Structure formats: structure tokens, C-alpha cells
Image 1 (cartoon, rainbow, N blue to C red):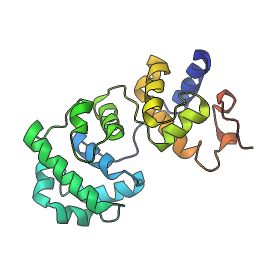
Image 2 (tube, rainbow, N blue to C red):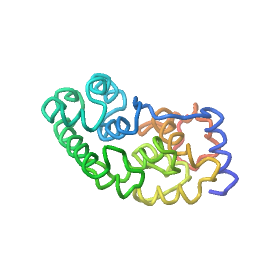
Image 3 (cartoon, one colour):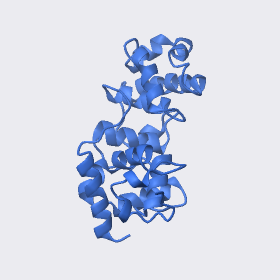
Length: 210
């Protein structure tokens, strides 16, 4: 894809949504981290319903530790894999208190040292909470990057690296949010909504719907 087309794609996405935000509900970096960990293989909507009950009770690492694994699991039992996620949240809270004074670290390596936190989760936190120009490649961004030609790759890491390399700098801060929202609502998996797509004629996808 040539640079002019790439620039126009992001220009249109920005025009439609100048200030994109995550759909997860949070107030602090800690709440964001917990919400992203809980969102693995779950919808943002289901996570928000659970955290709406959890965060008023336990919104910091120390309060989550006081709550304990069993009661935490009760608060998030409507989310898939809730027992494993409860265990991870307890362990990551313990490590935050032990190693980082309860604060959320601001490097990918430190974030990935926490249970339940992989590269994608770390990138979401770095971008959303701390304003770092990272690219958190989930299934939506992987699909959009490959279909459009913005950053084709065989695995999430390759897609991430290509998007970071080729996305014009002026769009990099919000590119992750624009692409994930585009994949969630327009460039959906089974039948993309190409007639509604504002970048249709710029997209390289050969299987466009009518």
C-alpha cells in the first residue's frame, strides 16, 4: 500500500472519530489493567457489567488483596474463565504491591512480568493509560490490517511491527483505537459491512460485500 493511500485511510478514520477511546470503563491505570486482563476472550460490555460492581468495592491493588480470590471470583463470575482471571488479578496485585509500590509500571517488560498480562494487554495499558504510541493487535486489528493492506502479517507481532513502521506519525497515537473500532463495527469477521465503510475504495480486500 502506498503512503498516500495509507494517509487517506487514517485521515478518514480520524475525521469520523477525532478522539477515540477504549470501550472499557475505568478511572485509573490500575482499573484499566484489571479490565483489560478480564477482557481476554470476553466482550467489553460483559467486563463493564462486572467491574461496575467490583470497582466500587475494590479499585486498588491493596483493596483487591483484602477482597481475596474467592470474593473477587464472585464479582466477576459472569465473565468467561473467571476463576483463572481472579487468580491472575490477585497475583498481579500482589506483585504490584511488592515490586512497584502499588503503581502500574510504564514499560512493556515490567507489565509483561505480571500474571495474565501479555504483549497485547501491555500495549493497551501503555497506549490508553500513559499515552505511548503502541499498537495492541487483537483479532479485530489483525483482521483489518490484513484485509485493508495497512499491515499484512502472518501473526500479531508481524502486524504490530508493520503498523508501527508504516502508520504516519500523526495518526500513531490513536491508530490502535481506530482500527479496533473499525473491526468491531464495520470490518466484522463473517460479513464485513463494506457498503457502510468510509474507506471502501482504499481497501485492498478482494472479498468486498455489496
